[in-house]
Amino acid sequence: MQESPPSNIDLDRKRERGFTLIEIMAVVLIIGLLSTIVGVQIFSQVDKGRVTATVAQISNLEAILELYRMDMANFPTTEEGLQSLVTGPSQGNTNRNFPAAGYISKGRVPVDPWGNQYQYERPGRNNPHTFDLWSFGADGKTGGEGVDQDIGNWIDEAGS
Image (tube, rainbow, N blue to C red; front, side, top):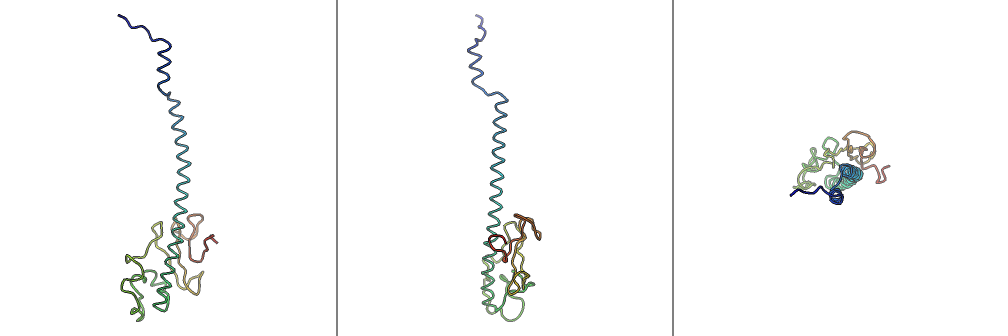
């Protein structure tokens, strides 16, 4: 017994079951475009979050430095830097007021969200009566724009 050739109805059903290569490529292209748009938005939010975290860490370090000043009668020198919040002052006999555990938990000075050390200078160029405390931003270099801009304790939250 011979099989009869497929009818037009059978061929139409086979075509309806699958997708053509062009249809699949169009869907892949659309998904790629959408993921690119979403990815750009997500990464910009990550950068904004790092800037916000940097501002918060600088504010916390300022408060810790103020506690240090109250106990030690002065802010650390530029040479002592932020490490003195962990190890104590290097000069004078003011170590008797230094807490045994230091001023920073975990015994180490935090780094900025990009993994770079915070910068400290006393007296500061921008705050001549106290100190300057800043991060170089995403690029780790002086200056910059956007997320590469320096973030310091002399800059208000509006960025001026």
